[in-house]
Image 1 (tube, helix red, strand yellow):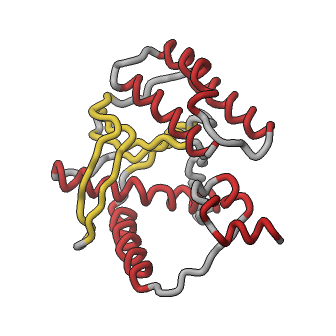
Image 2 (cartoon, helix red, strand yellow):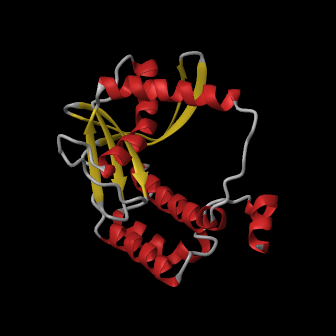
Length: 219
């Protein structure tokens, strides 16, 4: 699928840089040379395809290393939340004078926190995405005995680095959310289809095997 293969391609190039296998200049060359072969599927429109291509190219042309020393990339962490076992892969695990950070590369253009007394919709969206990093933080804590100082998103299409201080309350809420989500799933007995044209057509890679998607196309 276009969006997933695009994200995987960008992730891989960033990984090669932090593993010391490619220079900044080589990343841009690889992007141009391999885009067609690595990014599969069809974008919703030529405009979307063009925007994604140009955003990625601009990112690598203006590539700036993260303000953290790389400790690991694609770091595998195994951890428990209650009695539930989880496995996660941290895109970038770094360190600064303040301590360690967890960073995730995102094609989505998340917004910096507004700072308003009442959270905005973009603040709420950011908090939803931060759950993933807080769960990764559980893996770091169980491995090292310490929690990260910062949780970060590298929104490469918008060339925005979002840095959030670690908050204990949000950490506990994320673990509670994970536990309750698993409970709801395991207790569910009736899984109803949720057919959405965009998601089914451009995000789901098993749509050709889904009878509900096939029926929706015949309407």
